[in-house]
Length: 292
Image (cartoon, rainbow, N blue to C red; front, side):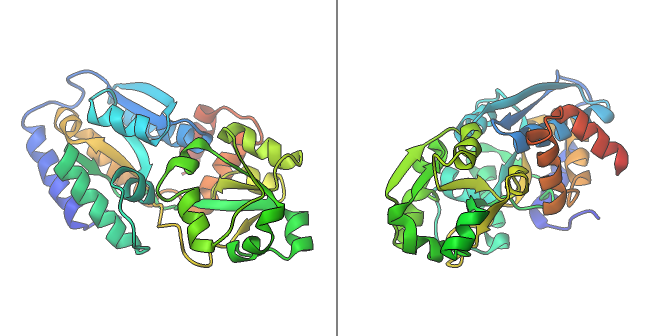
């Protein structure tokens, strides 16, 4: 179903005007970027394959880097579109705090991205990928851990592993520790790819994960509920340079066509196929598209 959101309607009008200025496919390829973790590789490949299916030429710059690397690539014209998360844009890029309402967060990021950088947000893809604190199932049972507040009771005796971005972001570790009033016995900074292995091997006791990670079920981990609602909503949605919508009007139709296409369960399954089963992201996306 096509969205009636006012910002998306305004973007659609701009695209219609752009059709009169440029033919679809002109002006070089659309550069599709992604952040440097499995889910983003999948989402970047999804955008690329959908664009190619409509005849839009694509250049892939997948696994490009973290949030700021991808954002700056759009701002500087080194990339044209990637999938971002509303809460990440709200807190890390815009440095906002103080709301947990998904619609309000989305409206703010749409408006400010357009005003500051002439970037447009497409409709949400249908799932949310929030930060999640995870522990081994055995520890959750023995220590009676179900919420992050429960974790605060035993934090001084535990070793935590967090990624560099989570350690640095406004919505990351420092704010979380203040909100819940805990301090771990030790905190280790680990790359995302090493965190699950460290947790599995007992080098750390708690890790920050993405709620749609495929490894959560594969390693029998427990996600601790954010009972104080510290983390903002993180709806996944494509962000695109408005200039590219004028050169390639079909891009907007592709983004709108992906509205609501992925729910949490589906995204977690796609992540599992790539991260745990070791399948190629492009092949996984191709198979999923063929099954739709």
